[in-house]
Image 1 (cartoon, rainbow, N blue to C red):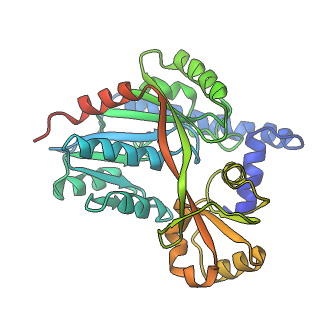
Image 2 (tube, one colour):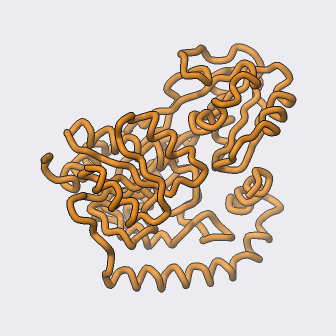
Length: 335
């Protein structure tokens, strides 16, 4: 999907003026989709999941598509497991290669396996000596048994919301009943908005641990990874992520400069033509990108000029201890 189509989809899902009728027209397709997902989940509830021998499985996933912070939170999970002395491995679909590159850069030496077949990926992780598998985006991939399910909800999303294609949800909010832990994330939403989402989520999963995470800016680097300062002149944001407008908001706040947004599709694979387009639109301005986009733009650093990468960190505002307890129990004793 192109960046323009993704932007239109977000407008439909958010119910913006002029797009409500499109959402209504798509509603029957969502009902059919929801019925098929419900049947599949009921079948999977009866059992049949595969449990690889010798490894525990921690899944980090969500209900809605894109933009909840799965990859940073999965990276945080890996960090906690490493601190406990475990040998984690990350298994992800590998769509767009950016998540794989991020995990590899965050934790050198930790196996990072790209495989849309999560069972096969977990078996490969075990063969490489891992004792815990961390699934990046695993909530709906239920063929693989897991010891703990962490589900992320973005405070920027409507909750509850419509199912695809009239809304961003992959499955009904009833799916939260499967969650061992719920992590509400916020980027530009207020803490009050996030707290309201927590209260709504408790109604669907009263027994789940619940935490609140702020995915907040943590510093600037150049495209090559050297420490940098915030831009002090006009900025062009180039972003191939699920919520480019939210990143634009953060850059505008952090830099205090005039900021223009050039949005690409989520997981966009940049090429030389894209680089020329970005440079032409920038017109000599500082270019700001996400850490995710920087993974794929580094080979073109010579042609882009002054590029700054705005990094983010996982900051728990509440519930961290409860999530850490889940990880400790699920991973088991260090061997």
